[in-house]
Length: 175
Image (cartoon, rainbow, N blue to C red; front, side, top):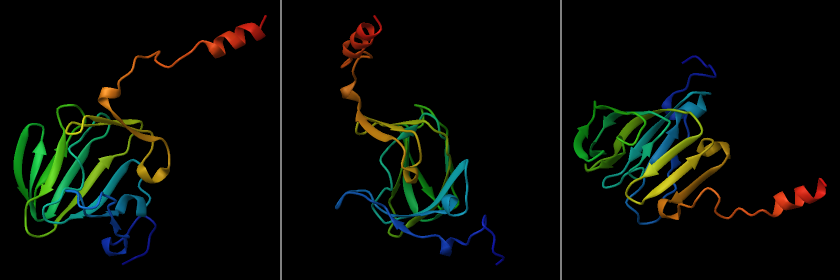
């Protein structure tokens, strides 16, 4: 195969084990294909998720759209309030918005292997309905920018924690 900065064979993309809590229902490996070949506006990764596991919690995006194409295996797709059986050859669209929370769970006895493609627009707000969290992301995970998760019940008012100290200091120094 010809060598080019924007072309790569999947076997040449490093395999990363997902960093999940020990003994959890989450797991798998990921190959960040888009990052390996210089993609800027789309992210694409190849996943292998072992039997009985899910790669990610049930979540939705307010900015980014995702697509999955399943190569091998079977699973249950949680999509909103629906649970749908999926298998190799299936395409799935996850438009942004509150109507499209999703999670793919491997229910087969072999790895569930799929390609996930996503727009890479930031800032991004994600929600996690099962755990009542909100994620705020200014950059991708590997870019080192601001990324934080919050519990929704920690909601505070706009002026909570703000004081007039600096305003008073500036007013005094300008007189």
